[in-house]
Amino acid sequence: MNFFSLSAIHARMNREKPMIVPSTRKDLMIVNMGPHHPSMHGVLRLIVTLDGEDVIDCEPILGYLHRGMEKIAENRTIIQYLPYVTRWDYLATMFTEAITVNAPEQLGNIQVPKRASYIRVITLELSRIASHLLWLGPFMADIGAQTPFFYIFRERELIYDLFEAATGMRMMHNFFRIGGVAADLPHGWIDKCLDFCDYFLTGIAEYQKLITRNPIFLERVEGVGIIGGEEAINWGLSGPMLRASGIEWDLRKVDHYECYDEFDWEVQWQKEGDSLARYLVRISEMTESIKIIQQALEGIPGGPYENLEIRRFDRVKDTVWNEFDYRFISKKPSPTFELSKQELYARVEAPKGELGIFLIGDKGVFPWRYKIRPPGFINLQILPQLVKRMKLADIMTILEVQAINSFSRLESLKEVYGIIWVLIPIFTPVLGITIGVLVIVWLEREISAGIQQRIGPEYAGPLGILQALADGTKLLFKENLLPSRGDTRLFSIGPSIAIISILLSYLVIPFGYRLVLADLSIGVFLWIAISSIAPVGLLMSGYGSNNKYSFLGGLRAAAQSISYEIPLTLCVLSISLRVIR
Image (cartoon, rainbow, N blue to C red; front, side, top):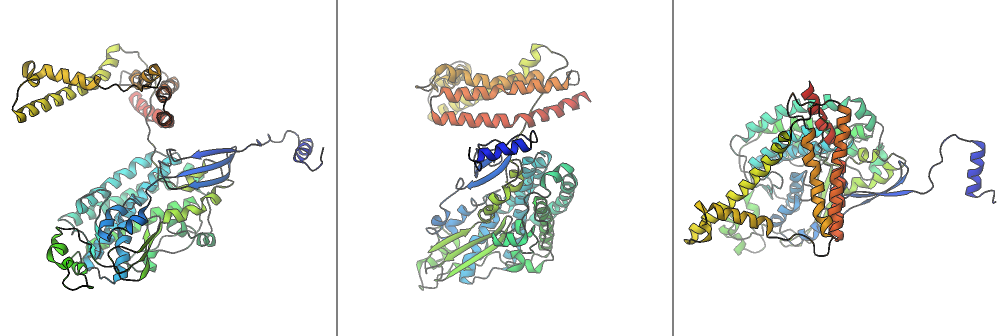
């Protein structure tokens, strides 16, 4: 035996240190996290190499969201391209619109009215808060705390109500314009926004009380994913990841864009560089955003909200594009204005970091070159280095992904109540849905017959009720959904098995104070057993279709069903405890 061979070295170590620790398995495991992982929800895939629970390597795979945005931009005018840009980052849509108009404004030295600049700052900071909220809730859910996930949607919906009132859309706003914004703030909007600011400050205090000093939370995030200041600069990090590493760098202070210099606010930063520091930076930034919004609302000036003169073409005098219809009434598609023949890099401080655009004009209405610098893409570079030698569970803490996990669950009974209590909750919604479908079919028949001024089968029976029953029955059974090449029995039985867990749920839900649980521990395990039936039915349907795509869909649905079991149990356990009390 070769004295220096690997087996010989292991043999000597075992002789010298017998029975100290179990030997690590020699073969490594490669695991996919995403894109269908609940914490990735379709936009990212990680190929993780594991030695037990230890991460050996991690390779991020991108490209699962929207692509081709740069080439689309090079074949559209700026106004035509604005509806696309909100898809870059659908959590911080105002920032993608801002950088899209800021670049050509700087390229053409276009002045923005003061009122429009104030409106932009207000909407940008509201969007920053909404983005941080949708980071906070799913981040806490990923590391095991479900309660903040519900709290953040409470405040986020209020922000989206304000956006809807100002722009007409809740998420994809299309609100920014070159030289200003699309519309002025509606009457009463400023007062509503001030009310939200006062309310949200109490919400931030609630988050800090609930999360910041929680010992379980601190155990998960403190000292995890540490990034030094010099290391953050070398990797090109920006935003909270850079400021949490001790670097006071905020483009709102550095580049002096919009009217941020007119407000009193501070750059929030931490020096530890771990996940806890990044959390603290984001929480503090939401407070600073509220300060900026309040100052902007109280000092917003009057005047125009858009510089309409920038719609005029200078290259050709008396061109058709300078006519009144094109510039103001917009009866025809307006190319807005020419992009001068020069190049420019513009950037803004988005919630995740530096969002930039490199733009080259060519004396035309379309950009000659349009290059996007997304903050998340750059910040993701350091992920493989951060997760190495960490545990698998630490990946979500370090990644700080915006993900959504749902939950639900149940238990057991103290009294076995009559079958009527089970059948009524089941058949009541079924009967209601059936009647609703029949009524809709009947109304459709009556309206159709009245419009066409004809009689016939639409009037079968008293008031056409018999025809509605016939049409409803045909609606339910006229389509044969069974796959021609699949296993008909498996495909038919699968959905029935999957629905059994839902029907049996009514056996373990306490519907009143007299219907309580006899043994909570037995009830929990009973519902786990019941809910485990559903993935079996989903897999049977996917396999019975004899189609690989349907089978993959069944696998995904089964995985999601399994991932929801624990929070589902906890949810109904809380209901049961309330009933007992």
